[in-house]
Amino acid sequence: MNDFTNALSAAICGKADAALILSEANRFYYTGFPASDGALLVTAKGAIFYTDSRYTEAAIRRLGGQYVRNSASMYEDLTAEFEKQGVKTVAVEADRLTLAEFSNLQDKLPGVTFLSDATLTDLIEAQRSIKMPEEIEKMTAAQRIAEAAFDHILGFIKPGVTEKEVGLELDYYMLSHGADALSFETIAVSGVNSSLPHGVPSEKKIELGDFVTMDYGAVKDGYHSDMTRTVAVGKVNDEQKLVYETVLKAQLASLNTFKAGVSCFDGDKAARDVIKEAGYGDYFGHGTGHGVGVEIHEFPRVSPASKAILQAGHVVTAEPGIYLPGKFGVRIEDMALITETGCIDLTNCPKELIIL
Ligand code: ZN
Ligand code: ZN
Image (cartoon, rainbow, N blue to C red):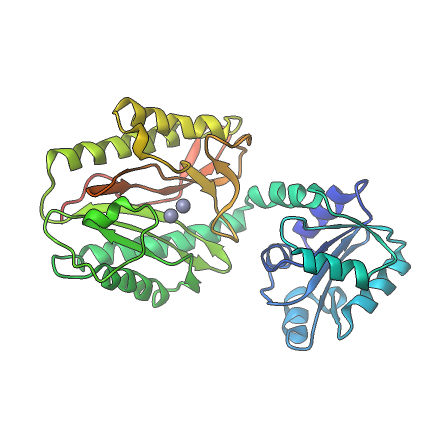
């Protein structure tokens, strides 16, 4: 079908006779075709996309008629295909299927043995984590939309405007400037609320001396962007300044550490050490970053618990933060493409403290 399905076909060989991909995100990754329903069968002979009449014509246009089956009775069609190709073992997505869905598969496809351990999950994660140039282009395009929204919002934020209004303005700007969707529910928090790492925008009005943290992104052609900026309104005190500078130093330390062959543990530690040394170690509770792609959170995680090693082609975020309960918080987040010699920051947006 394409390079992605060919690579999976080769990777599954020797482990199972086929991979059956049912989850929306993985189906989209392998076919490039967005559909709420369907199944992708990948075997040594190639790939077949089963879908119903709602999607058949669009799928044929996108993928080519030889790869698409209009399947009113998908399980019977799959059974026939298994017999035709001699498929005995079928790997499934253990991390995506519910127990009910798996039980249903076992009922409907009784002639095969399912490989339901982490085999297929691990293969897909590894493949999806290495971004191809066309994927990087889409993510960069999404990121550029978010950056334009940032420029716009700097002129919008002022005392009296609510967090909700800031969030909605970012959303409206992105959606009316090329974004297909929002990466996730935009975070726009200010003042005491900025100490909540994933706070929800409220009716709180922005006040003089507030930090405003905005964490948001755009989706373009199925690929996500993710960025966070914290800006100050009117003035900052010495503590705000120190915390901002510490977070920025930590963020740069992790970006400077990112490189193919470096562990995610060390990528996280670089940022964490800076924050610890400044005395704020207790106020940085989350991991430093995560992979991004057809989903907002993907393999690998850049965290103390991660055993993953960064590879060329990974796109991961660097987003350390310091959150002082009842006071304020700061987070700065960029997306970076890992290379053999370091990383390329895909975020083209200033990070020095902006006081509006
Ligand atoms: Zn984010
Ligand atoms: Zn993020």
